[in-house]
Length: 315
Image 1 (cartoon, rainbow, N blue to C red):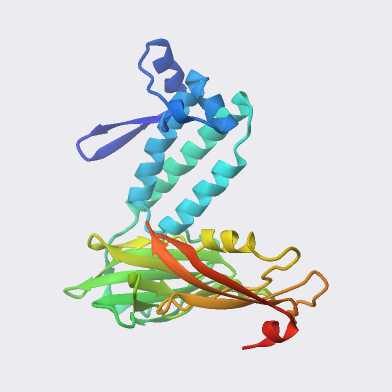
Image 2: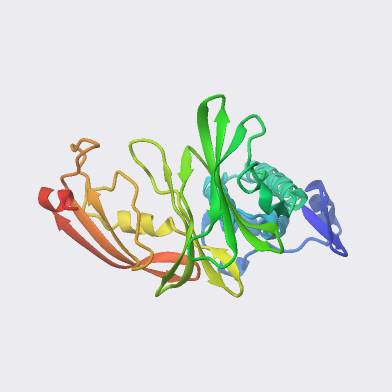
């Protein structure tokens, strides 16, 4: 799909018009440099004018969605997932582009239609509704207040229920001015409990941390992290480094439960499980690590592995 601008309005145009543009010579190239294309899917896109135009169009739709969304962490995760699952044949790939562009345009429209003010008096009384909320579930404010260490930041923690059964959790961060709250960031995940957010000062910079965990035996970390940069809170990739770390574990060892770094010191540790270990009791060893932050992405600066049951059980 393409879109054209008129003033501040954005008009979305059907992907079918891309084919029309191709016949008139109006189509542009892919969103990346085809001269440097290496993966097979990039070569496929560069060699097909329709796919090349679709790739250009999705880049435009992506930027619009990113500008409109208050949950950029979820949006980036969703986009990465789509990219990894793209089909490798032209007809299926074109259809995948069509569906993804439609989805991005729909999300953009919903975020733009969302109210951008909220009364301070409502902070503890009613949920601030976001496009992520399931209309079939009932939202309850589970906690609200001032963000710890923050300057005029407030928060609202939400629970979404089907009857008495809690299904999902959400969090909203607001900026307060003249008795009015303006939403800055939102977080929403299945089976998640968020906890009171706080502003953390570390060597990496000023960070906003929304702690969160997923219910279940894994107790996985679903917290959100943001860094204050260029006058705004920008989302930080807190997941990629864990994949990098897992690839460096000794063969057969793995981390079976959530990993919760200390963002003040940018350090942390996790027990390591062997395939034969029960879920409760790791016996393989322990990984300790130090993180760095660059280009809004956490990365491993140091990793040390100590093998054995004693190391695994050490607190």
